[in-house]
Image (cartoon, rainbow, N blue to C red):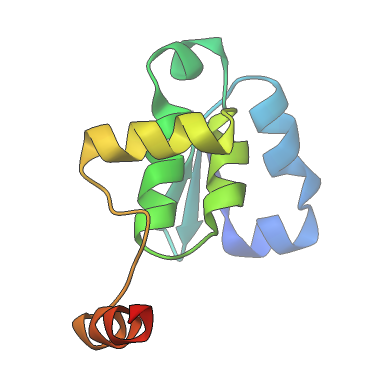
Length: 107
């Protein structure tokens, strides 16, 4: 595993890509303190379902849309929705107030 400082990353952002393409994990540091770890998406991670878990976590945190999460997971939107259901992650996010308003509009 290679360590790459934030300053070095600014000066040579391609290094992170090179490491990922070579299948290497990279520690990102700031003043010798580990800030993040990058992990390349390889066949092993895909088999272990990491793409699906990562996509689900990003969707649940509302960092990305459902469509983008499905793309990260390499699944159709329909299949990804099924996976979310199995994981207990709500696809439709509606407050109690919004739900009551919608129900009133049904009449």
